[in-house]
Image 1: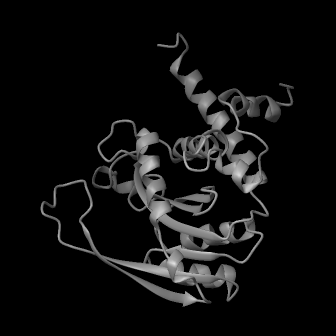
Image 2: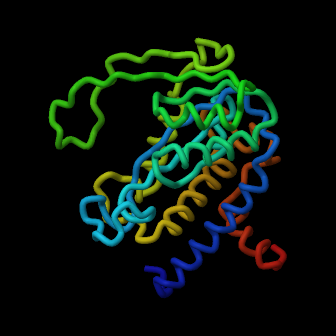
Length: 253
């Protein structure tokens, strides 16, 4: 299709993914966020869990991987994300990374995933207004379905501080999950486009969030999340994003 070797294209995407990762890591500090929502989204690398060879069972990068995401409810900026396991260790890494990027005390909402409890306490102590939204799902009509069961109730539960009940919600981060599934082929549940290496999976995410945060104009905001959050002065173009490669290599645009 491109007239270029496949390995050349893959290397270009990996190099650009690394550049996007590094740029966002540096740019996303002192964020003016006030209301944060967090969630985790499933995908897989190398093979589905049931097909992972015995010697790689339980090893990160083989089978199930989870992407932890944090979105600002006001600017829609995805302030932090992390690829890893869905356990206490990765919850702590993720929440500590989020905490170091924020300029203010925030209201945080997560689902009822228990590792968040220890992670939030360890990263914020009492300097946060934190609530969980505990959801109860009904039985699936067909266990072979790939669509989730229906949510039959959602109970807000205050954990720390004084979260505003009107803003105890995970709606925006769940919508971001849908955006990821629609925008990144690797996150489709039935796919042959999954990453063979976890590094490439992470680079694909860095590219996605670079475009989402800095280049894609949000329909409601009429600007990009990065502009709304004050970490960019204008909406980036694809050429601007690709230009990060030249900046990393010391070549001027």
